[in-house]
Amino acid sequence: MKRTADDAPRAFDRAFADLLRRRAPDTHPRVLRAAEQAAFAIAEGHAGFALADSDDDASTLRDALRASPWVATPDADAAADPAMPLVLEGDLLYLRRYREYERRLALGLRRIAAADMPDDSVDALDPVFAQLFPPATRDPQQARAAALALRHPLLLVTGGPGTGKTTTIARLLILAVAQARAAGRPARIALAAPTGRAAERMAQSLRSAVAALREAGVDPALCDALPLEAGTLHRLLGTIPERPRFRHGADLPLAFDLVVVDEASMVDLPLMCKLVEAVPEGARLILLGDRDQLPSVEAGDVLSAIADAATPVDDIGGDALATLATRIPAAAGFGGIRVELRRAWRQSDALELAPLATAVRDGDADTALDLLRGNALQGVHFHEDIDDPLSPALRDSLLAPWRMLGAVDATSSDDIDAALALAQHARVLTALRNGPQGAGPLGARIEEALAGAQRAPYFHGRLIAITENSYRHGLFNGDLGLCLRSEDGTAVWFRTAAGLRPFHPGALPAHAGAFAMTVHKAQGSEFDTVWLQLPKQPARTLSRELIYTAMTRARTTLHVCASEAALRAALAVRAQRVSGLAARLRRVSDDFVAIR
Ligand SMILES: Nc1ncnc2c1ncn2[C@@H]1O[C@H](COP(=O)(O)OP(=O)(O)OP(=O)(O)O)[C@@H](O)[C@H]1O
Image (cartoon, rainbow, N blue to C red):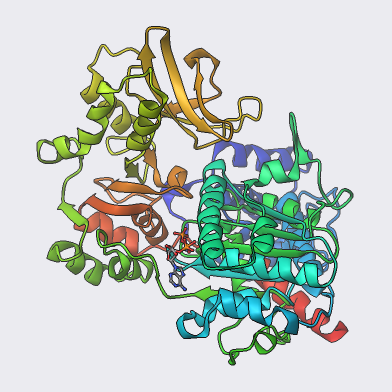
């Protein structure tokens, strides 16, 4: 991926290069340019700058960097000299800080994956396993994932929407609890996700999966031992006000034996590093996610890199737990195991998304356009060349659910609860924040259409979203609030962990209008109806992962407003990130396998 004029480094990146030049005026301009690119790479979501992307000849640049006093060239596992701001490893130039995150993350993952697991016999668990995964109706990948978790400390469970990740985790946790009980150990389990919304969704799906298992006759004592709450990773690790570091880390590990992280594709490099370092010796880590979704906005496409380095498992056969739970030799990987769930189980008569999602994921624009234009997919509507969801043809159906909010009576908590559900029913998703098809201006125009140009800032029926975590309020990034007027004045209502709660608008943490939001912000959420509005002109943020993520947020109805040109441009781009993590995990794996 060659860089183009519109992804030029920012003033900040230039200032960094300038600082190096002022400190050592004889620094080669080539090195300064590369330093600027390494700083800019972080802003673009990469872990480092690939020399192959430079305008300079890569081998001349490599030599210049090696000769520079600003550039450390340590061994893969060794810490870089803190006096040097840049690190060159292979053909990647890193800012030292991010190289250290990547190195520490690789070491941490290797440590977790190499841990000895108690060599419990699993024979006693056979009846539970048979009950959880009745052989006649079992999805073999789901059963494998659950069985492998008994003997592997590092497991990735990947798959698209509705492939049964939560269903599998519920069963896997029951098995893990049964395993711990049989061995007389406590089962200390933590459930976490990168955002409050994703954590809440994880907990909800898990609760309903466990309720179904209970109904199906699974031992209530096992069901009762499962955690029913999930929190954000920040909460799990323990934020310290005004400080970037967490309470838990290598020196104060988490007090859990099994940590399960949902929506792991959203976790960035620094956070994954801190999480992994806080996982105690001998504990298990399970990462769940959809690797085709947009990676985190911040540096790293961490889940993809770990998945690439992990050993894929889909060929161990047999029906018995003991066979399935075999420890897989880590010959080709670093000890991490990956099970990919492929079958989509969610039955929705309303929305037939799978063929379109697959075409988008594979970047097959011809098929995607045929499917959209053919109008044959249940629940999917294509509005070709429409660059405004408020245009006369669409306006009424877009606004209909939100117009009903105007009539809500804010005195009855049942009505408020129903209104909050209704408010969350539909959402406009955009690729951009600004510009005519950006979330900001579109959201403002929706508000105007609902409440007029002279509207009160917190008009009755306005939907807002919290944009920061506030433990004090019990409100988290992505939480949705509905503004309602009553005799007592205007209040913004939220569903919090403590139930339905009103807040005074002036007392809220940072927030923004929420009728329209960017796809990035919508990650980890789902809506009955999604209106995806693409920009009129092809834009840099477009990628097939962005379109895939947006489309898979829809539960029953998907409207796509786009031109052929914008769709084709988006599907031609993969949101891939430059990262040394997979290579680092594979390289260390050689030593690791030799040691084992
Ligand atoms: N093996 C199975 N047999 C029957 N139904 C299944 C099976 N696995 C999953 N399901 C059903 O499919 C639906 C989706 O499953 P689940 O919520 O576990 O998927 P998920 O991968 O976690 O989805 P998402 O990422 O979209 O939340 C649920 O209704 C679940 O009951």
